[in-house]
Length: 395
Image: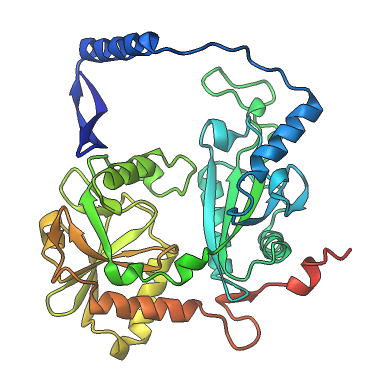
């Protein structure tokens, strides 16, 4: 028997369900799909072979089509050796290991009011993740150099508010043979990691959105959790997270919730969760199935420092069952992209009174205020962006 996701249509939408299908059944289903495809009235046309100039023009047309809605401001590529701000020139090689094999790690950094928030902590974590993923960085990419390149890429894109996505790849995949035996030069330093920094401006509608007041609706995900080593790695292999989100959206929910084999809450894709229990106890699930976000760590610090401003009696880190979680007074999703999103319903059942919780909104305000830039100069958490130098690309 093979365990595979089964897609069914419920209310006109595809919904994933994990079940057991024997091989004969799978072959029969694949055969019927091929038969239906053969019966369709389709035309067969020759495939064009493009010359260099034709390919460049086609690439430019393809990338220019959505230019008015494009929010990517700038890209640093170690393959190019610099920063580009023309979207037509932005791309990643098809033989890049993070594309072909998912062998890469990533980090997100927020840009708020002309400052990068938590830059040091996030670069530290990126470098730690690269070590865990066996991506050896060239000596020239020490921490201070990475920070400078990030800041200058943001400045070149003239981005005041948005997100920086940093990708580290093992390199071009011709340097490693996956499943075909190691090449002769493996381990001799010939393989060079690649760095990509993508700067995306914040969409105006997101800044003005009141979605956090409406809250999220979530569902228990049928997709199994990541385990052990891979659960603690922010890798480019995000297939499970994608399947969780697709399944949730097909059922009219905003996100799915990972639950482990023992029935304990593990988290949501790319974020953690927290619960407010009776007596104002803030409970953070203790799990080995998700990466502990820096936003959650900062949340704990802020709650402890601003205790009178938040209706919390104490903080506990422990395992939380699904039943206990659903009976909580409040539930919230915590991650850099939110930074706090109240949850109002789980599997169609209301959380608390079914409205965005007061404590969730208090914590969200703390984190939003913490990210706001200082009146002048940089701080340990806020790094000023050098716009004056990079916007003109002075030599």
